[in-house]
Length: 139
Image (cartoon, rainbow, N blue to C red; front, side, top):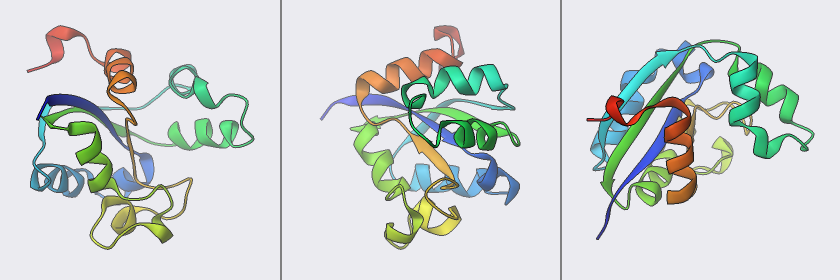
């Protein structure tokens, strides 16, 4: 098994519900370790750049508005098969379809306000980590 790193954002809806610690607990219970983390508020420019892959989609402007509506907690997670493992901890993108006990089922509201983001592949994780963290920020 390969030790990987992946990226996480606890989104404004979960932060507002005081969910950062609860999400981190789920991450750790899932066998992953937080190796870097930071609380911040995304600017419109940062949100547009981070979610640029979705810029042609009809939900892009709503996504940017949501992600800039309050603070977020960004972190780097590490563990065996971290990308896959964290996506299991998160659950389905739509909280209504997520399994019981997953982050999105317990903290998400709908497909747009679904509590947390996780990288979908190791390559994406590397890009997303580099967007928010320098190598010296990582434990």
